[in-house]
Image (tube, rainbow over all chains, first blue to last red; front, side, top):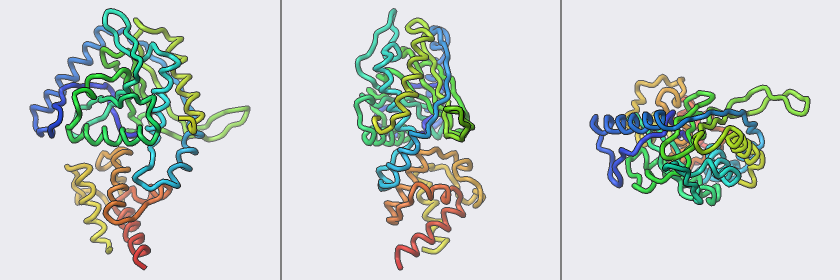
Length: 245
Length: 85
């Protein structure tokens, strides 16, 4: 996935519609914004954490076939599938999508925050709007555009402020799993680690499959582990039928 | 395209993706992804930019061959030779 990455979705210090002025001030401003937000999250949100391992062989076989007949400009990254599956799973478990504001305010729209690490340090987590309704090709295009603009410092204010749930993907950095810090006032954060081949038993047979560790950090004021487990289960189920994503 | 030109092209393309990268300090046989802290989106952008500049469309199964400076130079030199003959 895109690398998109970040242990903690942070941010907000990003100036909009103008290039990042390089500089220490900007870097320190972002560090401060992340510190403030993450400290608030850990202080106020009673997180609970779940993890599961998802077999990606169907998804990656489908992806390889799809990419084989696409020009390089239209190829998909595995991240696009992970993001789409996450945004669709929200329909099964709406308590993952929305905001806490003296009570849970669910969101009808799925604006998927994507944690993007910046080369200068720090990270931003802007939204792909209505990710659940975007065709995979459009979601991939949106992801490319979002990462490019995040790193160029030209995100729009609305993208920075309105994610309803966030995904962080540290797969490219080589870690297997990431337990994230929820980005307030959101109520859930999904993490994906790297895609690795692992021994996998299914139907009494042992084989080698590409797998990914999917994790959930969710707000216990809003949901319980049972719902969180159903949410990760829904992501898994959706990834087993990639042609439907 | 000769190897020197391929190497210069790589340096130019990488500069767009990772402006602080300095190819001269990278071991030709080390993984670019590790050396320059590139992620999969960066790599896709590199392959896309290569296509835009040269018309070379690298199939996904060949991506591993472009993972090092030496591999990139060899692949692009060979691909450019094929496409012009």
